[in-house]
Length: 227
Image 1: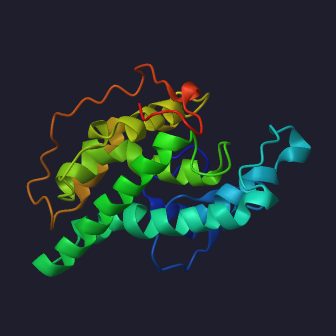
Image 2: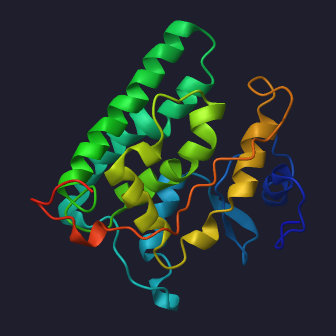
């Protein structure tokens, strides 16, 4: 049960904010406890709001969208979103071979580009952790467990890309990140809710990716070989 409103279904959170709401319900949600309403439900906007919105009440001050890197971050986000974050969905929900072929090719073209980029630098943009890395991680961490099989993005796995796999482990091991990843919940959601793709709702046992295994991203530099 959701602890703030006592909801058991997401639509109940939306109707707690607006009683006559009948549109789509999506996550994530940024909820205002004082006003008892939804502030925002767009992930790309929420991640930027969280950068500074709570600084005055003691939140750690970290800028993941610094002004001098915004153009490069925006460009990386656009490419990763179209080819990878959204690309896996375009492949998974394709209803004809041509659409699937185009989408899955885009997924792995993007992964190849990312692997090359991360062979030469520790993070995607500017030598520092940015929102581009965080937005990439959310799809990387689900890929081998869900998208590789469930969405038929099975040309390669993330563990087959040395730099991407090490990068994924580094982000997972940052303070507070692992606690946000519930792989059992992730797998049950995808395999049990998409009945047109998986009509039996059977959830596969594996793979059991070891996100806690040591990574070596600290030694990646401008001229370092891929790990």
